[in-house]
Length: 169
Image 1 (tube, rainbow, N blue to C red):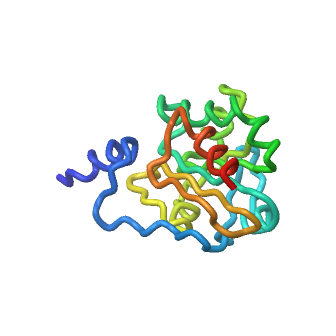
Image 2 (tube, rainbow, N blue to C red):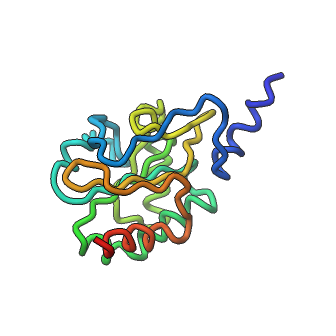
Image 3 (cartoon, helix red, strand yellow):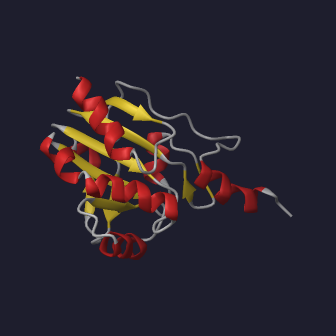
């Protein structure tokens, strides 16, 4: 029996990186040219959307779980302040389109959730993922270039962390 089969989901949720994980993209890197379906089954091309202005792409392990809900609700609760700074927000997990839609509707999330079922978006960003669970990380781009990253993203402080960085600039 493979012990990683049972350890991988728990490791991803608590933010432990298992051996063989990808290296996250570095500051100054261009927003990856990757496309994915959102919770409404529309294709989202991140590099096109993020060519101008701020774009926050945050990864979370699983929709509608306690930590992921706190993280999403942090961004929801401060969404006005975030969008006042010109930030477009995209949440990414390896859930299905249907799970993302249900999560967005249940918690009235005003931003786009991407269904990265195959892990292509996570791989493009260098986000570790195992057994269908991505590690919690956040990336902020300005005019298509990475300006800030949080490789151990907070759950209930995600919005204030992003705003704190922007307000320092």
